[in-house]
Image (cartoon, rainbow, N blue to C red; front, side, top):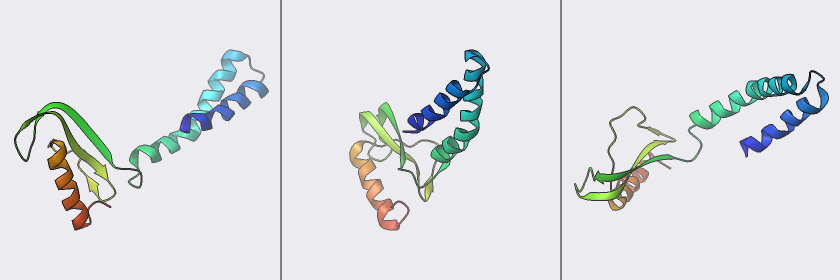
Length: 109
């Protein structure tokens, strides 16, 4: 959706500026960058957006210590941020159990 919002800005710059195609494109990208830098910053740093998960393959579950093909860890949510923590991947079952515990504690909504 964010990319679609930038299309009208690029189109207006390309249609109404009279610097030539190359310079119109440069100006359009500068204008788009000045506007969408803040949109992108909000998207990637906002805690009100959906939780961010990391998935890894061929891991040993941190809780049950079983080797599994795919492991999960919650990286960031509204009141939860483990971006700089040592990753602890869990199998699907253990990940769901931890998620339920965090929801009960009110850490994750």
